Length: 142
Image 1 (cartoon, rainbow, N blue to C red):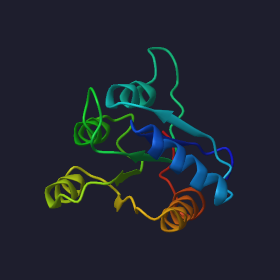
Image 2 (image 1 turned 60 degrees about the horizontal axis):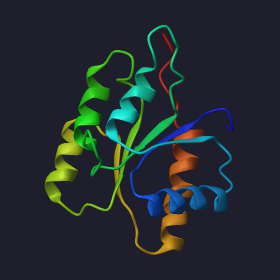
Image 3 (image 1 turned 180 degrees about the vertical axis):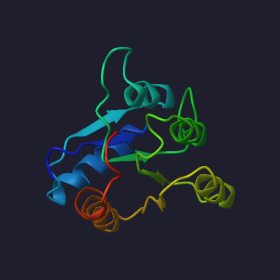
Image 4 (image 1 turned 120 degrees about the horizontal axis):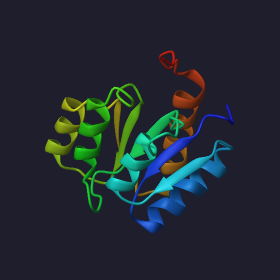
């Protein structure tokens, strides 16, 4: 399980620390790569020309991001042959129904609202880790 990395796309430092702490508290030892805007996320997923990008086991994607918003990142992930099968979980504080609907329309695998209560957030992160890192069977690599 440890060799499968997680890509966390989040611009809020408090939410980054909270998420990393929740992973540690849940004994999820996988490497978490943190990027702080949509452009950085796409650069990471697409790699540099000539480099083979290491695909994460799951992308945890916030919606309200600088440079390129989360929904646009999701749209680009799903439109690329290289990334279209990477699991994407929307992890957001947005309560907007349109965000929920548009996330699924664009191919999100899951939509989770960040719980305000830390203990509930730890449980949510633990369940995310167990499902996406242990239980989920990803498609075979090309």
